[in-house]
Image 1 (cartoon, rainbow, N blue to C red):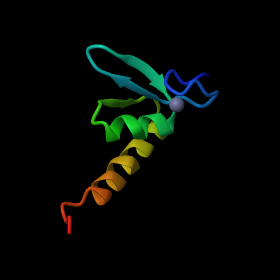
Image 2 (cartoon, rainbow, N blue to C red):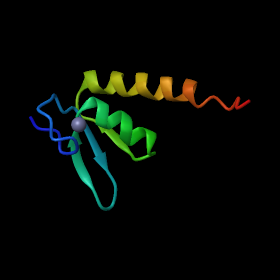
Image 3 (cartoon, rainbow, N blue to C red):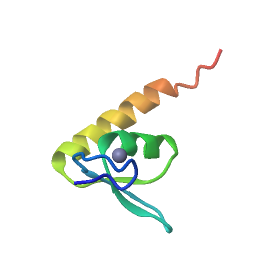
Length: 67
Ligand SMILES: [Zn+2]
């Protein structure tokens, strides 16, 4: 399945949905969407746990300790 964002042939287990867009995307694009604070939905159980991992690493990276 082609990712609707990067157009690569990949497993697309995520959906990015806002009022304007509704795209089925691959994991890297889901990460990017998350970074842009777009709502990302997981389309499978595997994707769901991946999304949880992404959310966790994002929290780590954005730790409010900016010195
Ligand atoms: Zn993609």
